[in-house]
Image (cartoon, rainbow, N blue to C red):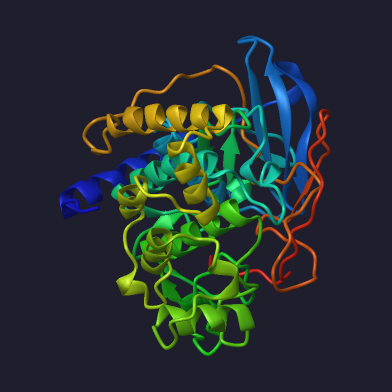
Amino acid sequence: MSSSPLGSRANMDILDELQLIAAQNLERLEVNKYYEVIRELGKGTYGKVDLVIHKIRGTKMALKFLKKKTTKLKSFLREYSISLYMSPCPFIINMFGIAFETDEYYVFAQEYALAGDLFDIIPPQVGLPEAIAKRCVHQVAIALDYLHCRKLVHRDIKPENVLIFDRECRKVKLSDFGMTRRAGSPVKRVSGTIPYTAPELCDASRHEGFCVDYSTDVWAFGVLLFCMLTGNFPWEKAMPSDTFYQEFIRWQRRRTSAVPSQWRRFTEQALRMFRRLLSVEQDRRCSVKEVFSYFSHSWMLDAENDNNNCSTGSTNSASSSGEEDEELLVERMKQQTLSSHSPMAVERGSGGATKGGMKESVHHFVSVSTTSSVSSTNSYERIPRETGSPGGRMLVATPIEICV
């Protein structure tokens, strides 16, 4: 993730320039004049997301509406500009270069993800098949590394912000850059936590602000992996008062050799990966891209057993096909450059729009440790999808950690 100070400064100048251009070209429009509204994808305390068709282009897109009453123009321009700046990466949600305002809202257009978000497809208490999870993880890791190489920290990694284009996760994209900040930027504390919040941000005794750091994304990424593979949260909050977290920390710091109960489904190699991603000391956490070195290993014990069975002749054709697809995908991704000097090609205007982190379905995961209702930093209510989605529950602490 190294880059020269000059290169970093150039990236920041580009973002500043994008915000200035967006501000200068922000027109006041009537939505119905230029867009046919299909349906509402999500809504919440500070805005909504609508699925629309552009009347001139004939393209489906999602319009993200942010209420002027609760959103500063500066915040809107920052999110829009960062989203635009990141969109050349094929694993980050595409933008259409459209931003405008109405009497009540600031609005911008993004790609529409046909299959919703990752949260929609994780079977509660079960998790995704390993091949599908690896497919998704690889793409999200490339997106995060792309972000980090440009000295930016997402700060809101969770399943709702990973948009999917098919339920096999052959195409997924990172979205929602509303909380993204430049690495090293000072931020103020707002009380509360979610399971993805790193322990250094959960420490209530630290009243001073924080400097934005890549390691908080790495921690959230590690928790995301656990959720994808198990359909549960590993803990309610990363604090000593949480029994499940405390059990993990004792093992993590090698005070006990006993693997915590909810981690016993993982292979030795997967546990080693989690130890690196979820190091309590933030300066000892690995980079996101280190996860690539673990892809040749099985992550789940049951998957490892299945692989052994396959070698003795009891081959499952569906899983075999999935493994072949995964190998092809990994091979293709290895050819993708992450160099900041080599822009990635991206198909524009073909399908979809993001929900911008807004929840759209009604089901939840099941937490291993709590019984309160699931919450999101975006506080969005999902609108039931026409095709419906599988049921289930994931329950999590309602307080939220947000630094602004």
